[in-house]
Image 1 (cartoon, rainbow, N blue to C red):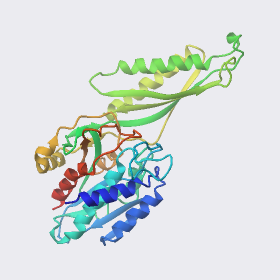
Image 2: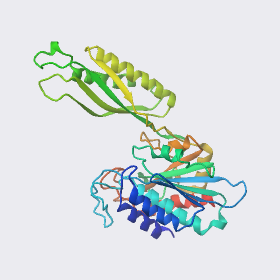
Image 3: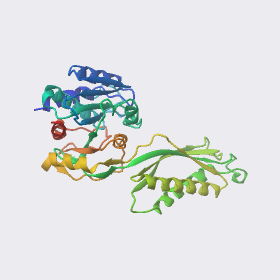
Image 4: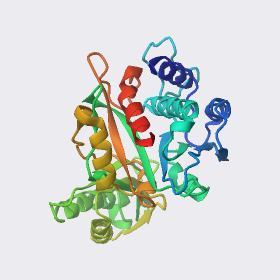
Length: 370
């Protein structure tokens, strides 16, 4: 019964992808659609939005539902009739579907307010892709006025079959934190390396030392380090004075993260010192904590899903929905959208899905609220 609305919203939003914290046209579309529903409150938080629908019942719980609204710097290759109208940008991670899901849910809530059993807060959050938009939404009052008791969200996943919802208690997505490894040496002619300190050679050993050190930590604790970029110097026959490598760690335990910190610092400095160089680790302050689902919220949602529920396989990817779960109990589900001809991975320039994949999650939202 909701398929037409899901399609209309998703396809309109798919045409106007915008990157993190710059979602102005997306904001305009959402603001107009929500205003028409006459919520009890509609608050703008940067390019994000918070819509409140009150049930009018004393001591009623408040449930929040979140959709991310940003897109990626990806040139679309789907060939869809409703493909991106913004060259070089694409909703390649399903956020257009998440918005369509939450907007359709808001439309149902607005049409059935007298039947609501709880207050509903709809959060349309900017900047999930690398900008930690959830943190800014929380700072802007996303979880207060009214005070949110539980928070729910989900993400399209082509590795799960369409119509199935992956949901499990405990850690289901990793935390991540970016860092820069800076190795400093001393410049010299490449023909006289004894006159300088080779920061390239020292950096190569530092990267290897970090990987080796982390392989010796507790193997029962999932963890990962990735270096995706390394650069330094400017000429092939001159020893580079400085090399910078950009890395990221992933983990499920905040305590284990501390062990990773120490191992990385010690390995990098020790490896660099062996070549007469120095090493410094600069940690980013934008941390994505692990996504840890509340057991009672998962149990409630799973019972409402029935046969559509499947166990959630833990992922090493990160999601800033974790910021909400650090403040309130709730859960984050994987929305199955895999089917024949539609199994391109997230962030692919050919990612696509059938809007019918959103119907199961929409039904869950309605059951939770009504």
